[in-house]
Amino acid sequence: MDQNTDLSILFRVRTSSAVIRKGYQLYVANFRRLFGSSWVAALAYAIVVALTMSFYISQMPPLVVATLAGGTSPELQGQMALTGLLVSLAGLVLLVVASVLMSYDVSAFGEHQASGTISGAERWYGRLDRKALWSTLRLTGWWVLVAMLASLIMAAAVLLATRHLGHMAGMALIGTTALVMAAAVLPMTYTSMKYLLTPKASFPRLLLTTYSIGLRHWGAIFIVTLVTVITAYVCTLLTELPALILYLANLQSLMGVMQGDPAGMPGYMAWMNIFVFAIAGFIQAYINLSALFPLYYLYGSIEAEENERNQHKNTTEQ
Image (tube, rainbow, N blue to C red; front, side, top):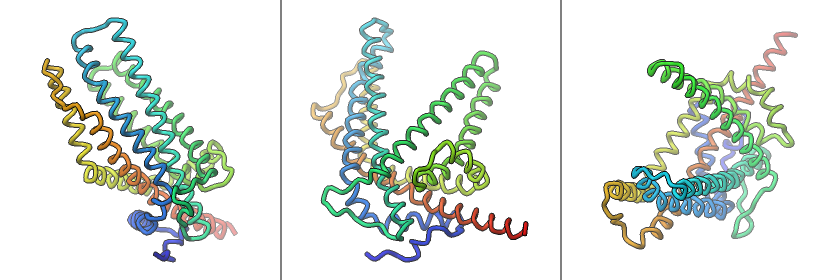
């Protein structure tokens, strides 16, 4: 399929609806090329998702039943600590694999920005852009730090609300804190995309110089982010119903175990969990990849609008 030449024009001022439409058009037009390049990374992501979910489901019944029974033995506490550690490690591995997967989008964006096209993989096992990968991993690290800072702020708000405020005032403080942090973090979406597409950029320095720009375009960033999140959520529900049904079946079994009934799940259910969650994870990988394309066009629109703004400002000053 030939590239649509209109899609190669990134730096144009566009409305939020045009940004979303162009982003998804670019993804659909190049899906086969992206799939051919990234299917190994998507498979790794799916396997990690399947193993993590299967382990979590297998550990829920004994831990929940023992906890409700009032078990506080050192053995139980050690088991709970070990389970929490393993789930945390699995989450870290999943985050790294997701970053590797996202780097394929970053590589495609850089190629599209430079030439207006996205090429496919030359080999059957795909390809890996090391520069895009390291940029994505570094950006993931910065976002982890932001998430940790946000968690500390929320923990402080919860502590203040529970110790010094009433129920209604405490809930209001917690809700307001969450909304303010979400609003403050949103402009970093533009900074993140600019960082990924700017060679040898420093994220902290770029954040200092571009945060005000993202804040100025907060409304557009909010609309595009909201629509892409809702789209990804709806697509996930429609394509991963078998995994959702299986999860609910395991949850129903857990509820029965909590009431003293046997698990009631067949012996092959562990392998069924891995198989179904692997398929769901593979589909989810490409749903997640699609969400970045509208943000890519949003970045181009903001860059074009800021360029026009600066030109108008310079003309006025002269």
